[in-house]
Image 1 (cartoon, rainbow, N blue to C red):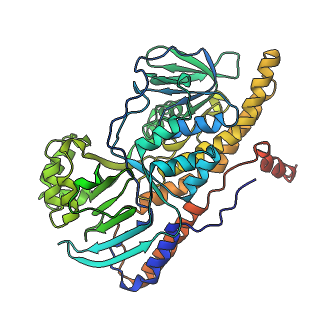
Image 2 (cartoon, one colour):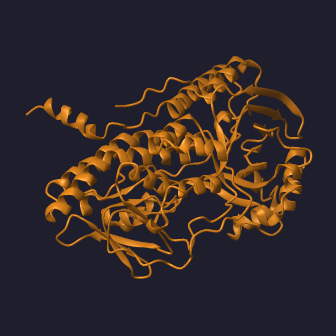
Image 3 (cartoon, helix red, strand yellow):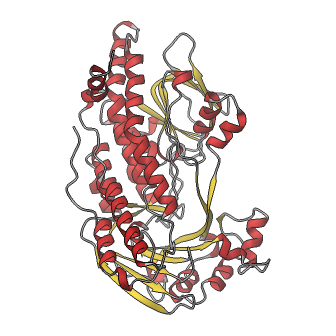
Length: 515
């Protein structure tokens, strides 16, 4: 049974407010400002479990590759349904401290968390900041404010640091089920058994009934799966190749009191377009007295024209591949030059040590509609989260889609895994469990792939600070399209709740197939 979402999201409300003032809005108002709080974080480094790799069990019901927000969430979802899973994380510790990034929890994310474990929403609220107001400012290229659009939030939106969210999810995972320092290498179908052998880079291995790859945008599981399913190496490589969007992002998190003047009020988001396509200043309350700030530029803008780079130091870093990561030397002064006309950007930069400024080229990967390796493992290897559908963070939906995946994957596969466990415990055999699990995995993909592909495409198209047409009819069509997209994203998720109904629709459809 699916839950029917009845509340309208704050994002949809904001879209309508923008639409009602459309005639007076310049063409550089962002296409989706109501879903741009895509990154937060915590300032303090968090120490975690013993960095010494623990001995691996010989066999587990479910092996989860990756201990990020997706891996922890699917563990919690499986645990709540009586399934024992183990997490295998390549890093020496599970909790890695501040990443300089974070998440916005929109209504669909809260719905997914409720389906993962009913205790999670309250804990996320306690660890984050409830956003009560957003303010959009449109400026020209010299920093002069042209328009202001303040909006009170009508539904719940929680901003929380990525690291803080990871801490909360990790509290649901007993330490004995986490294995750090385990870097995934490959998998193969077990000989004479309906299981998968998982190999790690240091030579250790584990056997699992189900392997879940949620190891992020650079997923090793996706890479291995692509080559296992495709004999042509070039086609396999192309199926997971990085696709750069052409936009650059810098972000950091600092104590709110260090930013003078303050970049935002408590519980508020400030979003400013800068008169140039893709150039944005974003600041917001990240909870726990922290300010999260973001600056964006397009690579074309940095490059300039006719060999005259507008930001020569940044262009040089892109050219010599030194661009990316924390604390590139000189980045603070380079950004101060690029954003000299925007005082709030300068205030954030002045409050931030250069070593804490994180930069990256925004990217995603090709849309993937088949997340399983049915050919080689009878569907016992499955991708989810960023491993299956990495997204440009313009809509703040990467983690939300991942949590939806976690809730629905657990709901789909739990009955078959429980049945297999009982059969094995009773007589050492699996009976028809293998076929049932394969069907459940396929049902999960059929439920999720189309939705995630649509959100992935929209996230790439509606990049931060995108300039639109001045032609009024096109503005109208654009806003209507954004409204539909955001309704679909934030109000369109309905978790699978009735476990024994998984595959029911497929069985009904089969009754009406022509003989």
